[in-house]
Image (tube, rainbow, N blue to C red; front, side, top):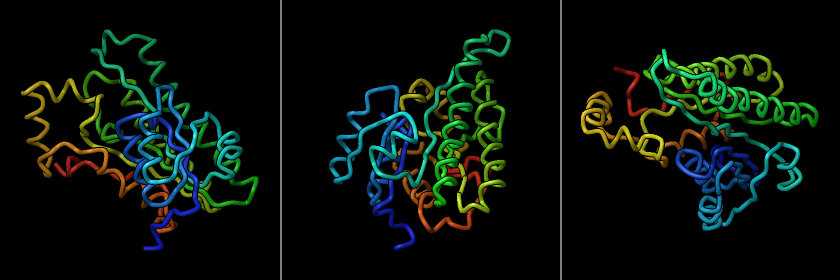
Length: 240
């Protein structure tokens, strides 16, 4: 089990105030990592929950500040993101640009900054991007989100090509349909909810805790020979 032990490691998790980010931050903390949480929203609930397993850290915005606070950074989990829904012909420039800026550009620049730090200090590191089922599919009413998440899959592979020789792992998790605030409207629609459940072989929505194993694996020595992978955690959705 030492392969999955993160004791003494520091993980920066963006978008950790709630939902999937909170679940992954908790999972990394439970595996022994110290956590720096970064979010535009109140992170007090996440920090309080992590405190319960004895590993709280303050949130901060950049890699240099993370290192100043925690002494090091070993893993970056690029989870922060937003989604905008509208018919294609009505989709606004604002809804396009805001999603691309946060979901794709910010993820790239933060991953780049973490990689620069590790290369400059001759250190290994782990980058875990958060992709989506829409990294593989087109979706409906979410063109900017689909573009961003398709881009995440692409830069995960591109970064892995350059960073693998330097001992830096870049991989991604593609969550399926999870019970979070983002999907509350869909789950409240009986017809849409039923249609989704009928396609998921596991016959249930995912829970944020279902991502703990994947993120621990990709942050741990167990994944040292895994590069450029987009790991679907979707209850089997893509198999259909």
